Amino acid sequence: MAKQRRLGPQIVGWLIFLAILATPVAYLLTREEVIDVTAATIARGHVEQTVTAISSGTVKPFLDSMVATGSLGTVVNVPFEEGDHVNKGDVIVELRHDELDAQVALAEANLKVGMSRLEQAKLAAGINAEVAVTRVAQTAAQLEQAEKDFESMKALADRNAIRQNDFDKAALALKVARESAAAAKAGQREDLVRAEEVRMAEANIEQLKAAVAVATAARENAFVKAPFAGVIARIITDVGEAVSMGMPLLQMVDPSTCYVEAPFDEANAAEIQLEQKARINLDSYRGEDFFGTVEFISPVVSTNPDLSRTLNVRIKVGEETEKFLAGMSADVVLVIEEKEDVVYAPTESLIRQEYAYVIENGRAVRRDIKTGIGNWNTMEILEGLKEGDQLVTSIGLADLADGVRVRVVDALEE
Image 1 (cartoon, one colour):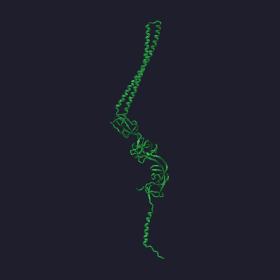
Image 2: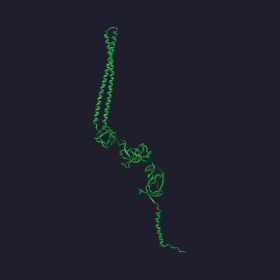
Image 3: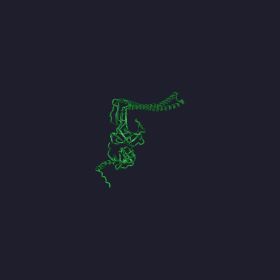
Image 4: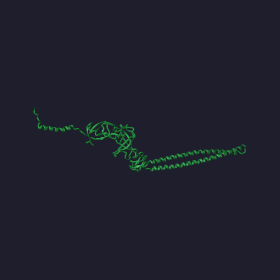
């Protein structure tokens, strides 16, 4: 029987050393990599489908007027300063008006003279009418008597009871009476002339009243009045300056009612409707949301210098209008549709809105999904995810894949 050879002490030592050395190498080869990710929990709540303006809108007042003068003149008084509140009808600029005052006084004096002449014409017409009536009555009575006398004389003359001379006198008296009656009736027609004189005097009064109105209007133009209640935004003129008709003197705005005009991409034209809710953000009030409604949609698409095409939309501000100053920039988001109490996920965690990664037992598990309405922040989940699921939000990681081990951190190191 052959003798077994024993390993020498040195060989055994080397084998033990190699075994110890190989243990960590094998561990390193078999250890699974873990990647850090950020995550969010699927919840239920409010979700909106929104459209955002492609650039900042501008706050504009509904009433914004460059108030101009209606006449030539020299400014003698500007009673208000920029920023002052004025009421409708307040005199905001006064022009020199001493000559206009004189023209008004002259027109009013002429009117008084005309009124006096009218009264004279009416009085003359009345007297003439009374005299004419009296004369007609008198001549009619005289004619009647002359006719009776003539008939009596004629009867006596036919019997040769009177002298021819007496009969001729009776015939002459009848002729004179007839002519006097005719003249009286003709004089009565003079009333028409007097009435026409009265009408001419009345027409003259209308002309004189119009002259007073013209002079008064010219004088009123020297007092430029506020067309509405508002604020003096800018004063363009100063005392002593000569101004011409139609020249703007100051700018007035009504800050109590305002709107925001914002441009939207033409691709969203079909989604934008009147009365839609709008969310407005102002740089001056960061983090604070204001709300309004769509009240006007431009009927045309505008072509901009950069060749982009936009649809201008006007948003009526519904609250805290005192915080909206004309000229402010405003970011506008239109709420196209909204839902309550629906399952939603952060939009940033969805890949092409087709699938997402859910964390299960420390691993990323791919889930195919179906989405509903949503925006850049949140998206409604119709299928594939449920409330309470933990969703990977750092989907841009190159190592993220179905089944990889993950560790949730608050933020990724840059």
